[in-house]
Image 1 (tube, one colour):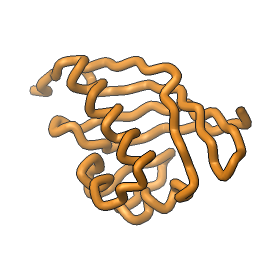
Image 2: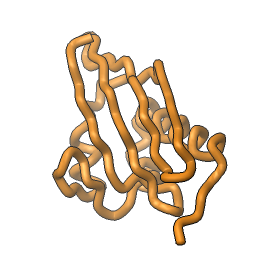
Image 3: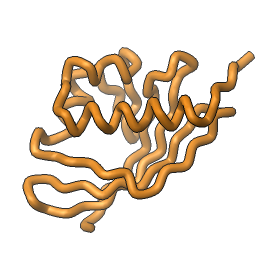
Image 4: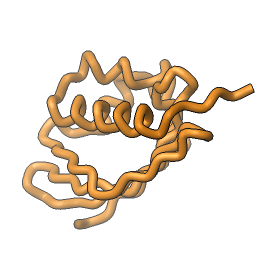
Length: 110
């Protein structure tokens, strides 16, 4: 049986994940990730996942929808990478212990 969590807890967990990315706190990043994360069909360890994110990247959450029953988050992010503006549309699937296990992501010019 799958346990459900509070919507605010899932929202807070996601916002903390984004704050960690923006702080470039790569050691703490691993506390948000399962051992292997499925990112757009690619199975990545923590280092592989971290390497997807250029160091000069900054994320701003523009839209956020959470579904605590299935532990999923949908977000639209405004991203700045080395001065270039992008938009990312993401879906995240969290495990029961609120670690990211799957990410579906589409990035387009801002």
